[in-house]
Length: 363
Image (cartoon, rainbow, N blue to C red; front, side):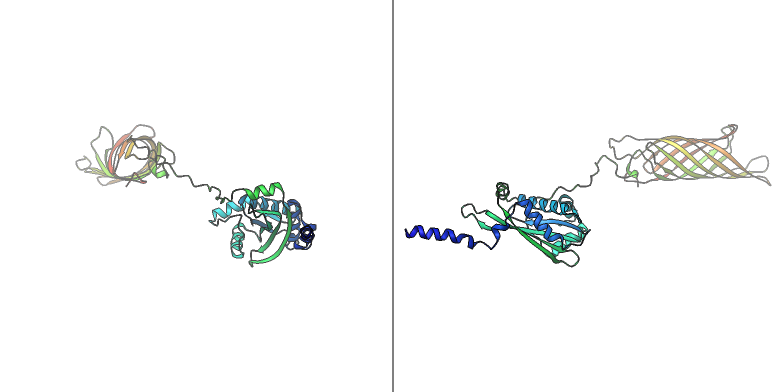
């Protein structure tokens, strides 16, 4: 009889062992998160930008579930701009500030996160158990959901709120989930160029970018015997594959001592522009070639001075250029035929020179 009275007394005293008013305040999860958010929203200035970064619990699954619920409650309350969990996590990973959503962050860490995310306030919190199931070691009965707001500028707490949450089957399953460590989401890595893909325009064997200094000689006409020699300075630009634009100038000196008029000498300055098709030499390597063969045509202007005995003649003559040649390593070899616009006069030019090619296959 005494034992029955003892147990009846114990049962009568059990409600008094719980915190006062708890049973009247225990809410479902959705109602509890709304209650917590209502308590926080009133302390955050309107139109502020916030981020919910972590809610401490036993499992990552539970923490992520609670973060989503708190974010939804803030969105429903309106008046604030809330950064999504996925965007916040990705930004923090890019900034190499990775953390566990199931761990509550301190003030200084929250301040660093807020600056990275561009927000004024950070929300963090925890799910705390009021009673434990001794046999299973997990929370049971009801829980305490607590959340705090940290001012990013000052790193101080500006608001706190809590609510009691009723245990249900869904919450129990989240708490029973394996306490895994969340891995950061994959960060897109910059594409690494293939070894066979040119990384720069200069490294494309089908684009010939170069500077050339050549020695040349020619005859004023294919049937004459007046020798002319000189220098050619030129460069090639290759914005389009398998072709190039060549810009340069000839400096030509000529003469004939046994001319009937008492000697002949000349000087010609010939700036020119050419467009040529270019075929790189095959080497078995898609990213390297020592040179290639080209053929092209262009136009120029000959500024000439002729001294015949005591007579000096100057002239300016437009001319057409037709050229072909090869570039091989440091050596260039080309042959050109030049004509006036009426094709009534011709000259030729043979050039051998040194070439500097830009890019990994050049000098």
